[in-house]
Length: 183
Image (cartoon, rainbow, N blue to C red; front, side, top):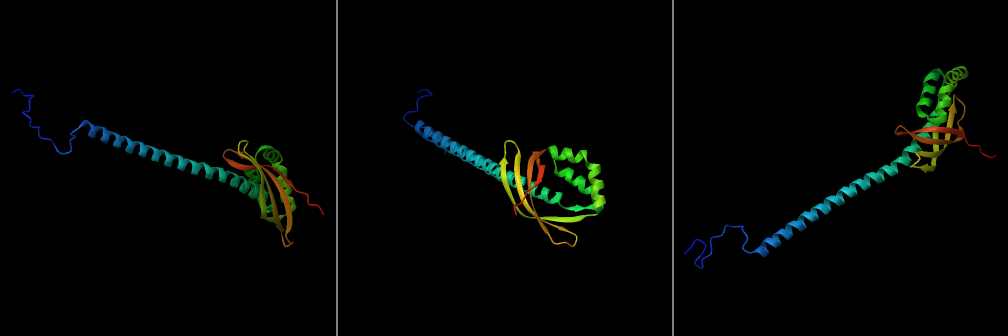
């Protein structure tokens, strides 16, 4: 009897080994299905996480533009002549484009004028709205109603429109103008 002949007896099997090639195919197919399922699940989770992050960024950018516009309008109407240089420097920090260039060019005169007026006023935003927003251009338009209190006088209501532009990762005022109110 040669070593290849088994005499009709099967060789002993180790536990966990496959008896037939069909068992191997079934196990391989099951493994492929499990790995593919895990891959699809991982891809969906990754996609969901990035979609949520993109949505929150898309939602927060208009809010950031609105906040910057409204707070800029408020800051440009809050004045303390005792700290004129700091007030004008604050305006410069909140501005960009032509508004910034104009303020920078007239900074000394603005500080001198504020000091001469001996004015202190505090502005508070009472209403605000984002009237336009262009994510691609990085621009927005904000309107705001403010209440300004100067000294012991009653509050006066003013309305402004601000052009806001994204500059160096933050939103800044590019233009500011009062809104005329009809009588």
